[in-house]
Image (cartoon, rainbow, N blue to C red; front, side, top):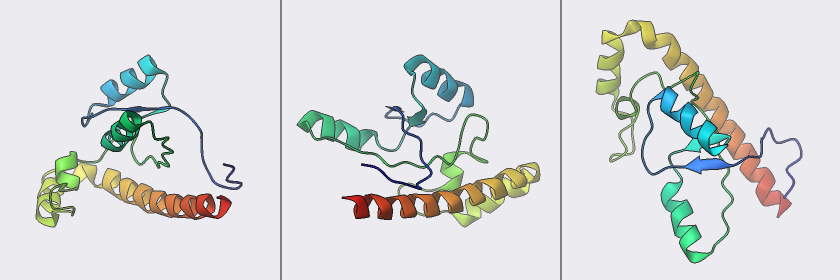
Length: 129
């Protein structure tokens, strides 16, 4: 599959079944495994495909890195159970830590770019099939 013009990097992902919040731990895992990135969201799908011998292509965008971690704990940024942002929790967190607001603004920009890049790349991938 060739996706001309798509901003991508091909590499191996280390898929883990838990949230790794520590930048140091993410860096260590990536170095130890030789992976280009540590993926914490795809594990269940990857495991199910591997158990059934089904090939998996994962198109991922990376919004946080060891050098640019999340601006707040994941539980503050997004409620997985409800699949939404809890604005009261998010507001309370940043009112208590206003020095972290620039990180939130950068993160929001990363999310916007990531969504656009993933959507464009998915369209190119489907057109290439």
